[in-house]
Amino acid sequence: MVLTSANGVSDEQVAAALAGQATEAPRRLSEKAVEARMRGAPQPVVLAGVDVNFVPAENRAKKLLVADMDSTIIPVECIDELADFAGVKAQIAEITEIAMRGELGFEESLEARVALLKGLGEGALARAYEERISLNPGARDMVQAMNARGAYTALVSGGFTYFTEKVAADAGFQHHRANTLNMADGVLDGTVGKPILGRAAKLEAMDDLCAARGLARADVIAVGDGANDLAMIEAAGLGVAYHAKPALKAKADAVLDHSDLTALLALQGI
Image (cartoon, rainbow, N blue to C red):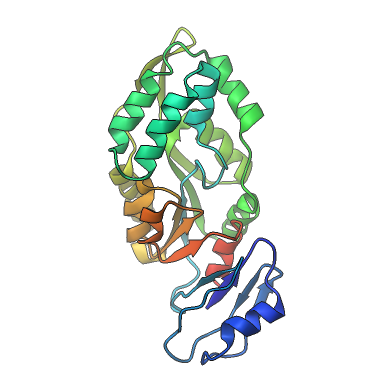
């Protein structure tokens, strides 16, 4: 059992979670995380403001992190911010939401959204990054802690390389992969490079990273928030839904609604 919360986990909350459970003595990992090994079958626990997850004790510390970017490592959807600069935010946000719920194919939705950005200059991309994009709480600490332990860290996004390159450098990811916005004479031409990195391609990217480093899917912790992350979340040894859409929560091994990204360390016993 792993208890995490961005606001901290109190001793009283730990006692409430363990009541009636057969566990070993709890171990405090930080002010925001506590774990306890179960001796029997776990019973469901609901604590207000605290995420309660049950993860296997075997192979907890993973060797590869694969993370989505938009609304996971950063708090926004980059394409929605670009849409604001282009004056089409409402139209694009509607398509984005439908796609994140899994009601529209990602590839088709991305092409439709990028088409609406045609004519937007490169300067708008720079402004969007400088003015709208920051790391979510705990992102840098989580990535750098995994790097320090010898894990490989990769940002795999259905967004755009213009942003993943910068976010990866800021957070400390060792690798990034995303889609390419096609430009002509310094402005977007309304198309995206092929093949489009969507749900299936994210899983393929994860498998490529595993193969390159001699790892199995069981060695991966993957984190995301939307339907586009579903395949890699299901396949990873530990799939984490971070402040996620219901479709992803239903399939994930762990769900984080109240925690920051350092909770990914706690789930691994770190």
